[in-house]
Length: 412
Image (spheres, rainbow, N blue to C red):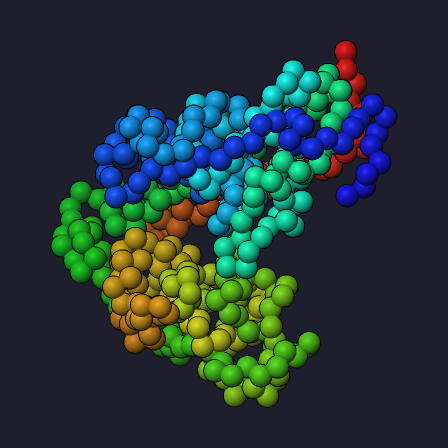
């Protein structure tokens, strides 16, 4: 940490600015403790950064029988251990906390509560560096209290907090738009992929009620007969810088497949597994890990290959690729994946199970209508998610400038 402070600013320990205390968890063996009206914040909820409501509530008796202290709205919450350790959130309601969270509350009029929140958020990396424990990393109240942060005079704190909070509001509003669109997509998928467009007559099928005009076919029946469903290279060998890229399950996590960071095998090995090479427009299916996750092969990966944990699906003339991509994401296919996944600690779907998965097959015209609607919703989600990332970048840059005094705000 650079110890030089801008003119008029000072480094202060959190203990000089605020009170820090943790909550408690009522006895889980007493069910009545968890029947009440008192909001109770768990560490996972700190991950949202703004806590407006809680998943669980506890009784008055539970508060008396534990250290689940009341914390006022406006307090800063810090996750102390577990997956969210070091994460910071602002509490917007009066609530109680569990023992995995510490509350940080300003204790004098020289400190602005929202400035403290943004400052702790900005310094969360310093907290993460201090994480103790190898199994389950954890922070201590002492570490939080001893953390030093830069503090300007109160008017500057107030102005900086106002600017950063306004950006937070935009980010939160953008996230709300994304959540609504994702809910809409889920509902539209359920509706369109099982009921279709403008149908009045339905029939029973292996995947539930579907339009009378639709068919249900095994996946193996709707793929290109010259390119059967198959997995890829068993042993790819060492990474070859200019070799043939091969798609792993870990490459499928993002929005789309990209060559960046993709491992490559030799031309000789790729040639031996030519049967599993992919072309632009093919679908790649995760047999392991995130079972059932699918991605469309982009032009930049035309001629690439697969690993043993992924499978190639090439649509026939019976189905358009975009429709099949959505059908493979449908709830009824997800249910079949869950039923067929093998193993308790390492789940996977076999090629035989994948080939036998049932998919609904409307007319090509209706397939195109369904995929166009769902593609449109996904495009809107992607567009707003890009805005969200842009706003996050703006916020990060502003924090770096304003909370270090690199850029000074004008106070009227």
